[in-house]
Image 1 (spheres, rainbow, N blue to C red):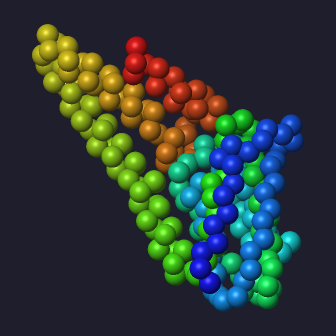
Image 2 (cartoon, helix red, strand yellow; image 1 turned 180 degrees about the vertical axis):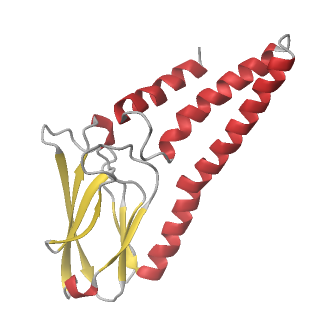
Length: 196
């Protein structure tokens, strides 16, 4: 079975209810199959033919930050039907900008796993590693500036590097130490600080 890609709007239509629902169908002719989405809301439940097969709630009582970590899991063979199958996804978020779903891939498990690993390296682990290096370089610039305050370019470089580091935290920090709404504001405002 070749990959079946489902493209869903990156920003779902706003709804006064606390959840958004997405539903699509695919044909299953071989197995084992797997599901992959490169970006989903931090709280979601996935159903296959009416049966819950996956859930992600970091903490049931607290909303968290959606990260760029891709989501992948196997589709249980006993729930797959010959022919048409239905996947339903419930997405939840108390934040207007966080109820999102990227395109979804359903295909042979080995191929989906390989794509998921590549996505994980590129969009989750890569930014985390680069952001860590950015923080180290920014601290080094800050130390140079503290030793030589007349070299103001080091101070500005450290300030912009630290602002950029804060800005990039949303790629991989799921449970910030501060409330997610404040965390989101801090990330948004750090962008303005870089251009001040």
